[in-house]
Length: 183
Image 1 (cartoon, rainbow, N blue to C red):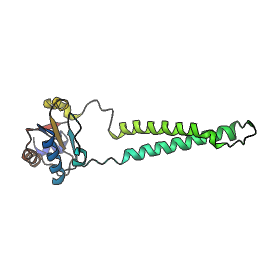
Image 2 (image 1 turned 90 degrees about the horizontal axis):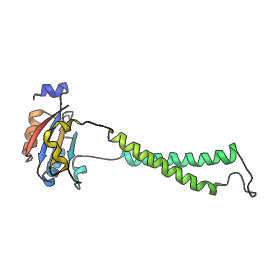
Image 3 (image 1 turned 135 degrees about the vertical axis):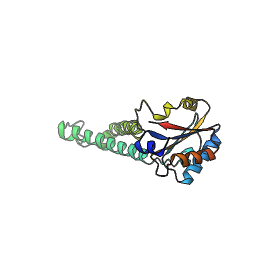
Image 4 (image 1 turned 180 degrees about the vertical axis):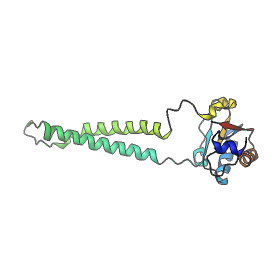
């Protein structure tokens, strides 16, 4: 396939197949060192260091969970304050309307609830889910990614991507096979 097809958007990228995790890890490190940034790796098991090798930096998720927890904490405390001081003040046992120690359990629960919702929905959003079809599913050998094969995908939207140069680069990384992935 030519660069013309890649420019028109028919080509999603090039995917290299490897026999073991060590070759995949070395190819990922070499790809990142060569300047490729739009890439992904697929493996039947977790590989220590692979996320750093492809340049994956997860900075958004902890912040989302923290913000969800802060919103839950403020919301829970504010709700308790509104109920006991503004909406329905009651004098129980001579205590003041603003008796903050009683607010702690609901505030804690809303903090955890909102942080958990932020974690679930943030993970779905950041991973681009739900995504029932991914272009790599059209590659026949990709079914082996859940069994015993390892794959490295360099996307066509990468600034350094050139079909032939990228193919030669992946083949030089001892890839068993390099296939084009179409949209």
